[in-house]
Image (cartoon, rainbow, N blue to C red; front, side, top):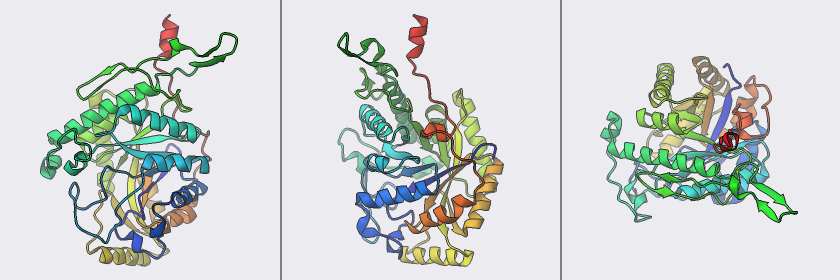
Length: 396
């Protein structure tokens, strides 16, 4: 890899395998406790993981996608990812915190201020994974719109009108959020006792956005946060999400399953950047892997087989399912790095078991220099962006 490889970990409940809560290492009685999430985040930080993502949605975890089911043998129910990250922030000091926050039914103003608050609470380690909601039953929680049934075949063909609409809306949400993040200039708070002015009103600006789904005027209620703009990370699998990432994100999580797929996805992402006219720094491309790790490949395969048997079927995942040793995973990470990937996001199948393996054996096996800086942007080599309104003072 030409850059220091990014190592991310994705946290979800008891792990990414539906039967993970039944593993001997699991702590299912603690899934809704603050201490559970704090301990996982601190374990990842001690291992020098760069960032962790926290999954979320507007509905219960369910199979098949977009529909309710009646299974009672899988984890159902989760805490709010943004609130988990805000709680974990003071208990950590280096790791980036990237919660999933849905764009489809949430107001951009609330998204912006919540993430700004996280950036303050973490002293500049906040990120955001925007996620669309295509589920009709999730829309019913809000009652403001009707989402048609999910057309999987249209999605596979890449011509789903619903997917294009949802990601078009998400693009506008990100734009509004970024405008709100910049609505206070860095020096808007002056605290001038002589004049009695706490703020310079001329350095606070409205978002002034008018779009197809909403209009937003006025400024954020939160001053510009330590990073200015927290990092935005998108998960993408095909053309429309790739284009969303190219227009709206700083880094993108992708899901190759083999070497050919890894090369093909890299090309598709770069093509999306060209089509959308992306300027500035290219997207950082991070490959996702769902991992079951043991000291031998046979033990890892046996562990996965046992989980699949408890689940009643092989685990279904958009990402590559890897069952092997830490050394074999390091070889995969190196191969993807040689292909042009900027890093990996590891999805532990079992928590905390596979996270412990990542911490004890995988990350220490990487040849990485120390991370620069204290903020998430600095850690990943991103500059702090200039406020979009700063040029107005120069022009004046």
